[in-house]
Image (cartoon, rainbow, N blue to C red; front, side, top):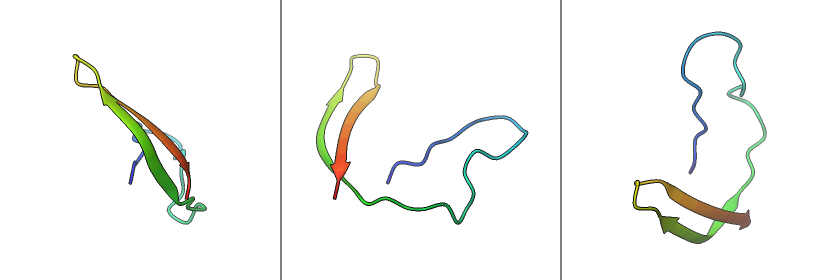
Length: 43
């Protein structure tokens, strides 16, 4: 599961009871800088 994360303080972007969408990983690539590019489709 991917969890979006916003650092700092202030108003929440996502509430704990927000709708959850099931996703399926269809492709992923790691860059030389360590970033993962992930492509998902609805499950």
